[in-house]
Amino acid sequence: MDSQSKNVNRLSALPPALAEAAAGRRLAKRERTRRQVIAAAIGVLTQRGSALATMQEIAAAADVAPATLYNHFRTKDDLLQGVALHVAETLCRRIAESYAHVRDAAERMAIGNRRYIWLAEQSPGWALLVLDIGLAVPPLAQRVTQDARADLRLGLKQKRFRVASEAAAMDLISGTVSQAMRSVALGLAPARHDVAVAATVLRGLGMAADEALALARRPLPEFPAAG
Amino acid sequence: MDSQSKNVNRLSALPPALAEAAAGRRLAKRERTRRQVIAAAIGVLTQRGSALATMQEIAAAADVAPATLYNHFRTKDDLLQGVALHVAETLCRRIAESYAHVRDAAERMAIGNRRYIWLAEQSPGWALLVLDIGLAVPPLAQRVTQDARADLRLGLKQKRFRVASEAAAMDLISGTVSQAMRSVALGLAPARHDVAVAATVLRGLGMAADEALALARRPLPEFPAAG
Image (cartoon, rainbow over all chains, first blue to last red; front, side, top):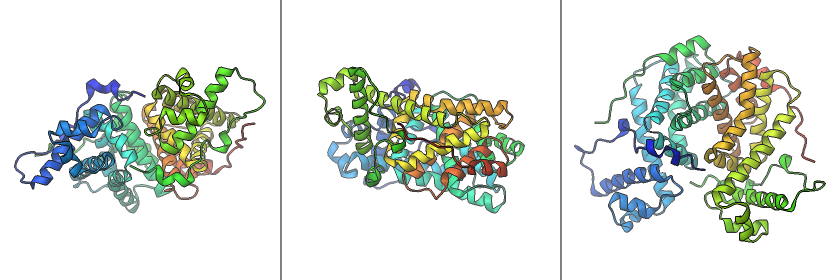
């Protein structure tokens, strides 16, 4: 039952690469408070898990009164949903931007899949939290799979992929990558698991073994720190 | 947050095909009580989810005193682990028995994967519970993936599969099948999703598209009700 606590020494909040630029942006006070609460919630949720973390702990960590917290999020479910959507939006936008210049759908697919697995390696506690919340929040799952679905459709149009059904291909992509993030976050995966998993997914999408592996081995485009 | 409650009308406890023979077996009283508690816990957990169900509710549903419940399971975590392992043991044994006569590893893999997805269609609430508990209980995940790992290794020996790495292949199998069970249980999957998913997994394991689809389309061997 305690798979998260085993990772307590490796826990960190947001992956450094996803940390947000704090300075240089002027936000309305309400929005600033909301972001402060979400940042604190990510820290508490990562350490305590979504089942155990309380609204009181999160208010204390955010240095706001409980009434202020409830003014932004009526219930713990609202807060989890807010955190999940904020994380998904930040994460998906940054990852999609990092490979916006790549035209080949197969290469786009490999980069996206490897990047999620890389994030799980950078920040295991954060990855387990995202997987935990993601399962409970359908809008998060929808947002996170939206870019993969676009790349899948592009690959079918480019005749790079050939699949039994789009629904099965989507379950292959999101299921395999989630499971690989979990394996990496729990310390169960071998080195270069991201490459092997990306190649395996490309094969499941109908590519030849050698081409899939060669594509999955290409250097990842840069993922610049937020700034 | 509420994905389970949307399915409340489709909830059922154990899939009928997994129901256990109640009569005809003599068990020691302690073991009988334990099974009675586990059966009641499955019902309560399926309806309330593992986060909300309380030990009090489970004791009441099992018609035992709370002290008796705590005599069998010291904590809620112990109980969840007990339920998970009981379900995994029953489930995996029955599924493995149903295709014990099949020699070809590729066909064994397709049957096993389709059978899990079939169970999610039969009993959506039960499937969501298994996925929910399974994530939190590493011994369950290990037990459930043990037969797939054996079939994967057999398929490599029989030269039916060719994979980038065993770890990536296992993440492919368990990730894709879990995600497909979730899609089916949530009512999001098209008809014959089990066939498309099994074919997609076989392709990810290195088989040619046509052969993968032909294998995945074969009639499933019988899955006799417990009796």
